[in-house]
Image 1 (cartoon, helix red, strand yellow):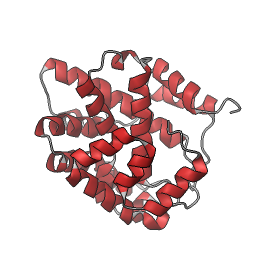
Image 2: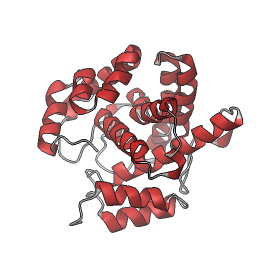
Image 3: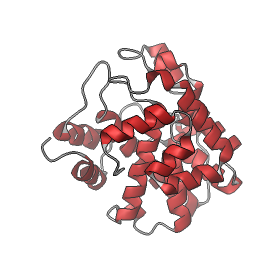
Length: 246
């Protein structure tokens, strides 16, 4: 996780706004380099940050661009720890793809009305149907805006699949996914599954207008039920990213 104190980090997000590369440089040079190598994607992130400027710092509302940065920082911590077997033999290129996928996993939400994303309470069925379109939107944004076409195809597919692994109402449907040669397919499956768990973890640990952030026991129980077989990853996240007094 980021070593910058929480208060200072919130100030960075509130004041730098759409200057995503400057913010990344303060937090993590590796993320800044990814954004510099992908200027069109950096612009999309900047536009997302600018759109969310009015909700920055508001209680119980986490902006999507901040959430994306949080996941990318967590992803880098995971891959560098060597404690997760699916990441233990990750190559330099694999690490980059994994962290990029985490950073851009929710970029598709930039296509969804901000009022829906910040709604005070659970979504209606119709609103949830619209919300579930964000992985496909993210897939298309990544394909169109990432600089390296080979990286773009893999990152886009990981983004598309980051809600397909949970037990409870996964999406999109299997028929909407794309297939790759076996080695790449395994990487996409593993990376998207790990990002799915980190994504759910970050969501549970963030307060919402209709609920408080979940404590350690609740987080572990809920994630274990939704992601069976991922206990090592779930416990790693709980041990490293939840204070001991919780």
